[in-house]
Every structure is written in C-alpha cells, then in structure tokens.
Length: 431
Image (cartoon, rainbow, N blue to C red; front, side, top):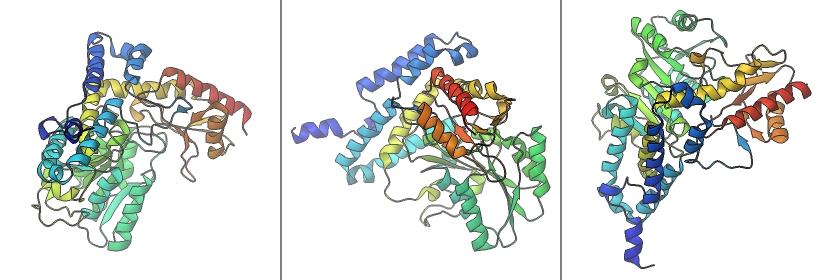
C-alpha cells in the first residue's frame, strides 16, 4: 500500500475524527429507524418484545460457547463503538504527536460535553477518568480533613472504596463509621435513619453506593443526600452500577461528588469512568496526581494523567449515541425485567435464598442468589460446568453468601430461562 493511501485510510482530521465508517453508520442508523418505527408500542410491549431485542443484540458480538450472566463486571462495547475505537487507534498511531499536541484537546472537550449532557450537568463539572475506583479515590484523597473528622460508609460498599477510606484513616487520623444496611429493608426511611444515627458534629462526608455490586440492592441516595444537607454534610456517591443503567441524571441525586464506570452500563470501551464534582466544590479539591498549572476551580486539574489512550475517549462518543438510541427508560425497564423474570420464580423457595430485595425500585439487572447449605463457589462452578452458564461468587462474611447473576443488554429471555432451569437443578441436586 502506498504511504499516501495508508494515510488517507488512517488519518482522520479533527473535524471527522468522530465519524464512523459507512457500514457502521448504516448499522447505527438502522437501529434508530427500527426503534422509531415502533415508538407507538407501549413500554411493556417494548420490554418484552424479543424481536426488538434481537435487533438490539445484533450490535453486540457475544461469544456463543457459553451463556454470559456476568455483565456486572463490564458490558462489552457495541460493534459500532469497537469500530470507532479501532479506527481512532489507527489514526492516533499514524498521526502521533501532531494529533496529541494540536487536535486531541478539541476531541476530548467535545466528548466531555456529550458525557456531561447525558449526565445532566455542566461540562465544567465532569472529568473523564478510567473507572469508578479512580474517580472516588480522587474525591476521598482530595478532600482536606483533620484528625478526628468522620466519614460515614456502609458494610456493603465496594471493596476498593473501603481500601481508599481505610488508607485515608490510617494516614490522616480520619475516623470511619460503618453503618449496616439491611438486606431487605422495610422502607427508605429505615436506611436513611441508619446514616443519620451515625452523624456527629465531626462528620464531614457521607459515602454511599447507589447499587451494591454484591447484592444488587439500590438504596435511596437522594433521601440520604437530602438528610445530609440538613446537617450541613455533603455526600459522595459510588454509581458504578447505576449510571446509564437506571433512569436518572446526577442532579436528581443532589450529591456533591459522584463517580461511575462507563464500561459497565454505558457500554464504552474498557477503561473509562466519570467523575462529577459540583462546581462550588472544585476549588477545594486536591488532584490525585500533581497539577498546579490549572486554575484551582478548573475540573481538568483532577484528570491530569499524562499521555493516555485517547482513542477510548473518541469511541465514547459512539457509546453515548447508542445509549441515546435505546433510551434510559427502556434500558432500565428491560434490565429489571430480565432479572425479575428469574428472581421472582424463587421467592419463598424452601432452599433458594434471594439476597436482592423484591421491590422493583430496589434492584436493577443485578441479582444475588444462594442455596441453603451450599458453598457459593461450588454453586457458581455447578452453573458453569453443568449448564455452561457463567456467573460469579459474591458474598459478605456473616451477612450473606451467594452467586451474582447479571443479564445484560444483549441477553435474550431464553438465556434467563436457561438459568431458571439451572437454579432449579442446583436446588435439587446440591447439598
């Protein structure tokens, strides 16, 4: 191939760097047209229409040698997003320093604005990070606190965030106050009360997880944040499993700090996250990595990382477009339908234990299940070896043991029904 032909194929100018190939664009537009033609269908009919979701699943490429019910780790990107990432990788590799020095900033800012838009906030309040862990480490380590100041958190918060909190406590003398959240709460107020009872005059931050990664329980974040404000306390929200999964925008939560992973439910390339810091709080935040060149009230000081794989950020634009095509309301409803389809069949079973609340508002796609007298690792192994269904063991000592089961956007109902058969088989044969 001649050099100029190669450049023509790989070097995409700043104005066209976000454009897909003709084939990819046609595929994306076809889904948008397909869904538009069915806009008169009721939400209930769209949720359960396997024909509709077969069209959606054509934009993914899941392996066919096992059934994946572990989309909770991350949701693979659509074929269009993958193509965008590959095209951008070729472009960056061809243009090298010229692109990074002269054009990259414009593309990052354009995608920042798109991301902020679906989050419902200003682009001046949003960082593009690598994942939730990085986002919330920036918050936890970036807040000035004195020895004896307190952070309230829960027994079901994500392990990496617990590590960050413990390091903060060990290094600076911060006091950590753990509250225990019931597995099956009777009301939102029961959870809010647990947080409120832990507050003292030294409390500086409420840390909460919108949807627990182990049990799948959704907690009433807005009510906790509102309560915190009545006490003059801000909140940091770990939304790894709810951003682009549940139908909300960041202002709906009324929090000051927010982190999420985009490669989970937004289906971005792996290695992308979002950090939101309310505008009036940016000035007092310290960056995780040194940056004294940026203005103190510039959100960009918090994402100073050096050279990074910007092709992922370029492809994020396509993931956002795909999310918009499906829509938050339909996505949330479909994912909850898939999880409820299997969980609801085992409520009250004499051996099967559901570790996820039954109320629709208290769960999404994630569910956790155990069998009395059966080791959860053995249960996950049974599903994989006997039924070719991939799940993962997720337990908290002295609280619950179980297997996390997480259908995703490409999951057809027949895979969920296969899991119902597998769980029934396990309840009969194991233990």
